[in-house]
Amino acid sequence: MSDIELLSVIERYLNGEMSADERARFEMLRHDNPTVDSRVIEHQQFTERLKQYGERVEFEGMLNAIHNEIDVQALKDEFVHHPSPIVRIWRNHHSKISLAASVAIFAALSTLFFAGLLKTQNQQSEVVALSSKVNRVESANAKLKIQTDKLITIVGASKIDQSKYTPSGTGFAISSDGYIVTALHVINGADSVTIQNSNGDAYHVKAVYADPGSDIAVLKIVDPSFKSLGALPYGFKKSKADLGEDVFTVGYPLDDMVYDKGYLSSFTGSNGDSLRYRVAIKASFGNSGSPLLDERGNIIGIINSKQAQAPDGPAFAVKSKYLYRALAAMSADTANKKVSLASKSVLANMSRTQQIKRLQNYIFNVKVNN
Image (tube, rainbow, N blue to C red; front, side, top):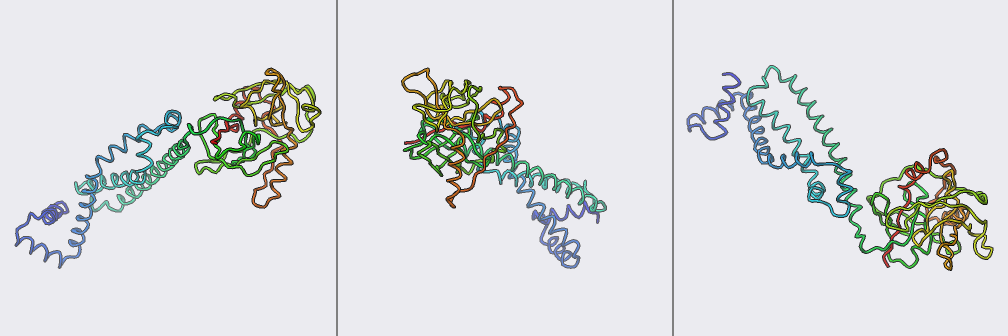
């Protein structure tokens, strides 16, 4: 009896198409011939998998449709605040999708086997080919999981209900792992605080240190969707800045990021205040907490106030050396991590537009819920 004929008999046996006498004779053959019995068991297992595959055909179609639609950046831009049904399907069913893809490949190969296209004499080489295909499926599923995780991260960031938070100021990163500095008065009295970058990604933060004397607050991102920012492009200047040197700032006096430039007009603030620089630069309410940078991209201060009596008057910035002091005091508390400020800027030889592009992802709109 050839392989194809044996498979035909096995199918009749499993489908209940044999008479009682035929069935009894075949079962006796199974009992006496271990090879036939093994083929029956294999055939039965493959048949069950084929049935599972049939049940998943529709789901596989959904998988292909979703896969063709995936564009992480487009989803991020369009659905950051209102995830689409497609995103919700990915979040809830990504493990099932991976399983369905694997079953689809396996079932297709088993169909070829039953059709006689995978001959017994070629089984060894076909096993190698099957192993290779399975490895490719696993690799594809791994990539699928990475894509899914990205979508989950995007949706996780969008969970924050921005309508509950009011823009209050600006903050900027002082480390790649989520430590942010802002002016203390920006968050003072808030029940909860979030920050949002120029891409619309929002994160929950908590205050880990406050220095009322210098109006400095240090925040830490505590949102599980947060990933490392990478190395900071700017440095922090500890020494005294130069009178008259050109300076600039980037912050959130509006919903969108705003750039302004000016110059350092005095080493002291109002009434001889040595804590602050006096800066001839346009600054508004939301600029509090913005970094003040020199031409080489070094942060020399933190904008925290302006002359209230003169709308077009100067702004004031806490000198960066007081940020160093605040972080030293913060690290003295064993509950806090020691944060070391970078001293070198990679922005030195760039144009202003290039500088802003490099640092914009490290500047945040600080929003509070009172």
